[in-house]
Image 1 (tube, rainbow, N blue to C red):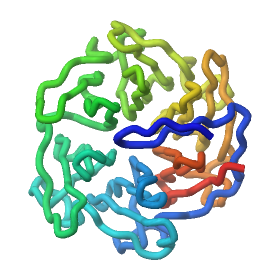
Image 2: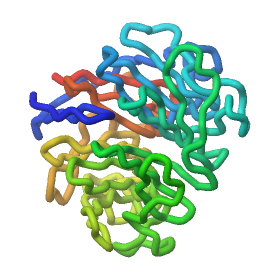
Image 3: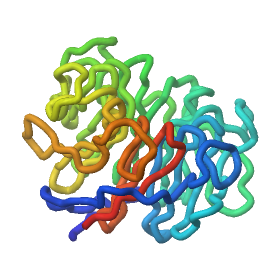
Image 4: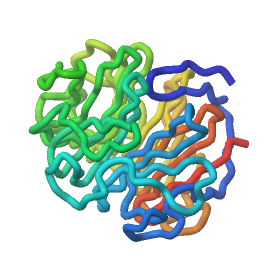
Length: 316
């Protein structure tokens, strides 16, 4: 399996006919709802640190903290940012929705939706507070390209902006034409992915579609969904987290349908790769999944929001 290392993540090349185990294994939050270090309350964004043996880092939304589980830590995770209640203090987070790892500075970059800011929290031992990178922003999702530009979705302004670290204004790269369902618009953009060509993929949540905006484009292309909400293979229902592999295959967390979908390039409909067995708490079910990611081996990780857990599905 070939892969291309970036500052943030390893993007695997996954065969378009790949299959995953139907039953997931809980790798974070195995004690369900709660604020102990073995629990989560509505996990949102997550990322995998392959440099640290498949460590899972997850935004623990309603606990106002970022949690980390190293591989094999089936019991207790570690609070690595926040965890001091909801608030706007430098030692606090307020409803974090997304998190990424910046390898260059060995830090976490976090969208703190509730306090309307993007913050950086260094990973070194003893760090007790973060620093503000961007403030006064209704952020939801974020990602970074291999040139270390930061991309942030604004779900109130219905736009995505790209920032150089240290720049608080950014450059518009997608949307920004008001709320709507036109090809130049979004209706609550949530999660993001950027490829090696700096093309931006956006889960256009309330339009029930995923958009691709080529670098420099004035409008996007619908690459998944776009037919209104529904549970058919051509539909999405409040899509959230997304991932694109080196072949251009899209993987999307289909929140309202409790399934992960795969859309190959140019496909008119997707295929269900895990879930799709109704809402529930079984090992082959989800209850409102939010985000997803892959490790370098192609194993799939899913933040299962209302089951308060992260599931890993092994590539077969």
